[in-house]
Image (tube, rainbow, N blue to C red):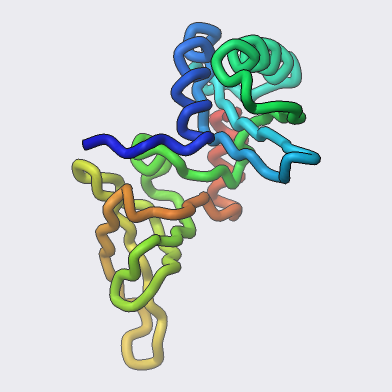
Length: 176
């Protein structure tokens, strides 16, 4: 049984094939504001791994607008903002957790795990639909105790990379 998609989910599903043909992938879609002032924010990345430029955003924006005018005519008036996900990007797809394996991230879950909703640690990849996070718990009794936490992907409410020297170095080295 498939659940009803959210507005953001519908938009993602509608625009992804066309953007893929242009060489882009949809990272995140967010609709903010109310009926008086709606902003549709869409984060994209290039499939070839090169940094997103203004030309990429303009080309994608024109394509997205044309698609939404036909496929989602009930959206009404909105401002469209197309951007890169940034260095400390959100992790929204299972493949993101694998791609950024080894880097630090913050995650918030829907259903508590060990009475906690927020976690911070090093991404240790995925296993099926499970994200693996290696956390370090610092205490006087156990200065560096490592704990592996397995989180079902569907239980993740928010996740993003943590901006640090390691992530900046990777960004500079790979120019992504």
